[in-house]
Amino acid sequence: MSKENGKQKILIVEDDKGLQKQLRWSFEDFEVEIADNREAAISQIRRHEPAVVTLDLGLPPDANGASEGLATLAEIKKLASDIKVIVVTGNDDRENAVKAVSLGAYDFYQKPIDPEILNLIVKRAHALYQLEEENRRLKLDSINGPLAGIIASSPQMFKVCRDIEKLAPVEVTTLITGESGTGKEVVARTIHDLSPRKEKSFIAINCAAIPENLLESELFGYEKGAFTGATKRTLGKIEHANEGTLFLDEIGDLPFSLQAKLLRFLQERIIERVGGREEIPVDIRVICATHQNLQELISKERFREDLFYRVSEVNIHLPALREREGDQIVLARFFMEKYAQQFFRKIKGFTEGAINAISSYNWPGNVREMENKIKRAVIMTDRELIDCDDIELENSGENTMPFNLRAVREEVEISAILRALNYSGGNVSQAAELLGVTRPTLYSLFTKYGIEQGNSPDKKQD
Image 1 (spheres, rainbow, N blue to C red):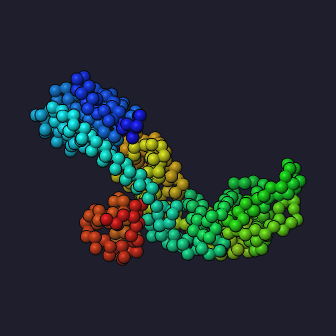
Image 2 (image 1 turned 45 degrees about the vertical axis):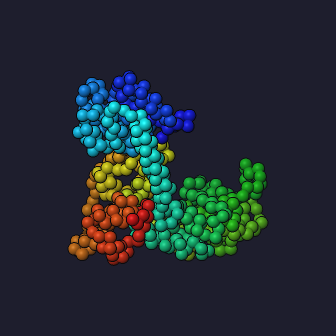
Image 3 (image 1 turned 90 degrees about the horizontal axis):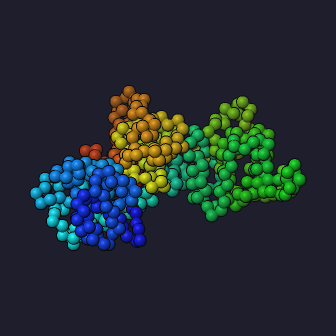
C-alpha cells in the first residue's frame, strides 16, 4: 500500500468539483488522490494502489444513474479485491447501495456528507485492510511443511521427512535418489540444518556441471605449479567443507577415473591435493545425490560397486511430484504467494480450472518445472486469479483410478480430504464443512488414512 509523507493514500472517485474539495478537506490525515470517471479511477489505482476508495455511483456518462459507478466497482474489485470500496450514494438510492455491497463494496454512505462520520468509516476500513495485509504476511511467513525448508502435505513426503529426522543426527554417508527437479539439494540442506554440523559450512558441487579435466582440482584442490596456470596453492571443495557437510550432486556423472580417489577419501577421510604429496585429514559429512540408476551404471561398468556401497550407507528416495498426493496444489500456492510478494503482484490464488490442471498435469520436470511455470504466471498475468493459460497448462489429465471398488473409494476419500484441507488453508472446521461431515468424523478419517494434522501450509486446526 502506497504512502507519501508518512500518510496512507485514499482515492476519491467523484465528478462533482465541490464534493471533491469537501472530501479532500475531510481526509486531512490521508494523502488524497482524485478521479472523476472510471478510466481515471482505474489508472490511479494501478499507479498508487490505495487501500481505500470512496466511490460515487453517479459517474459520467450515467451521472443520474448507477450503472457506471457499479461498473467501476466491479472493475476495481477485479483488479484488486482487497481494496476497501466505500460507496457514496444519494438518500433515495439505498437499493443500489445494497447492490454495491453484494458486488464487493466494503460499506456505503448516504449523502449529505458528514465529514466526521465518513472519516470514521474510512479509518475503520484502513484498519481492516492493514489487519488483512498483516495476516497475509504472517501466513506467507508461516508457510512450511513438516520440516523447515520442505513444502509438503502428502503421506509420501511425510515419510521422507520422518526419515530425515532420524538420519540427520547420525554421521552416515547418505545417497538421495529421485528424478531431476524433485528437490534433492533441498533435502540435503535440511539434513545439514538438522545435524550437529549446522553451524558449519554446507558446500555443494555438481559433478555433471564441471568438465572432467577440472573436476579433480575442484574437489581436491591443487598445489602451486601442479599444472599450467596453477600460480598458487588452492583449496578444493572438500577442504572448504571441513567440519561441515559436502554435497556431491549428480554423483552418477562422476568420471570413472576419479571414483577410486573419492572412494579412498570416503574410507580414510584424507585427501591429497593435485600435484602434492601431503596427506590432509578432513572431517566432513558427505551427502550424495543422483537421478540415475547406479545399479544399472555398475552393470555397465561405469560406476564402481565398492563406491556405491560407500556412498549409500543410507538411501532416501524422493518421489516424483506426480506421485505426491496433494502436494501439487500446496507447492503451487507456496510459489504463487512467494513470487507475488517478491514482485509486488496482487494475486490471490488460482481459478478452479487452473487447480484442476495443476492437479492432473504429469509434471515431468517436477518441482523445478512447477516453480518456473508459477513464477512466469505471477509475472505475466493481469488477473488476480491465475488461470490455465497463465501457467500454460490444459485442464485435462489421465485417469489412473484402480478398478477395485474399495481402493477407488479410499483413493477418492483421501484425495477429497487433502484437497479440502489445502483449499481451506488447513482449517479443519472449514474442511469438514466443505466435505459435508462433522469434525469428529473428519478426525477419524485422518486416523484411518494416516493423514497427519497439519497437512496444509498453515497448519491451522480451527
